[in-house]
Length: 167
Image (cartoon, rainbow, N blue to C red; front, side, top):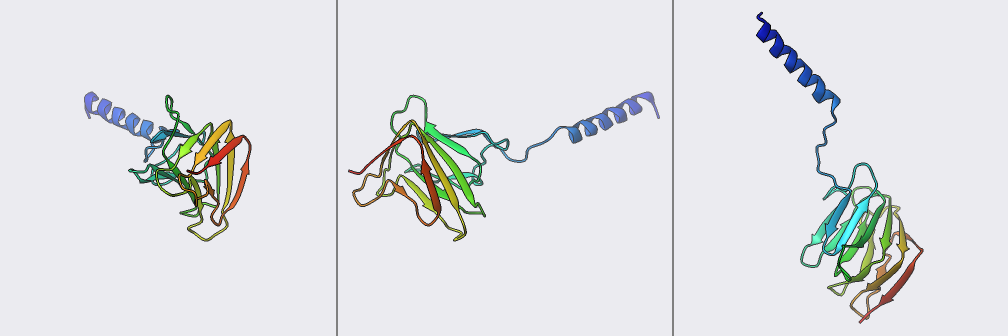
């Protein structure tokens, strides 16, 4: 073998070794996701993965569906003072618990739905912890609809100031 061939083989071998050392991520995860006027963040090392941890069920109405056991915080997008979103927390895919923090939100539903709903699609034990930080306003936009619909999950609500009203 010539020296040039040996150098090429050595370079190829080093390249293969480097590929095995450097971790590769197969999916695009993000620590922060914007949905309408909301910003959803996590400190979890894997970040948030669309269609795994969250989805946008109806882009017309910006319905954010959370299907994650990762702790998340939801706050207003910079420069926004109201968000016309609804949030669904669901246990699809075997999720048994959710820990959601709402920070200084002003939410109003575009439809006659609750602003925050807990769905137990799996009909399995599902514990949800909702923590409110700062002042949060929830407006369901309909007199017969609660701002927070606990559904059939075990829901714990704590902290902050929550103002709920209906038109």
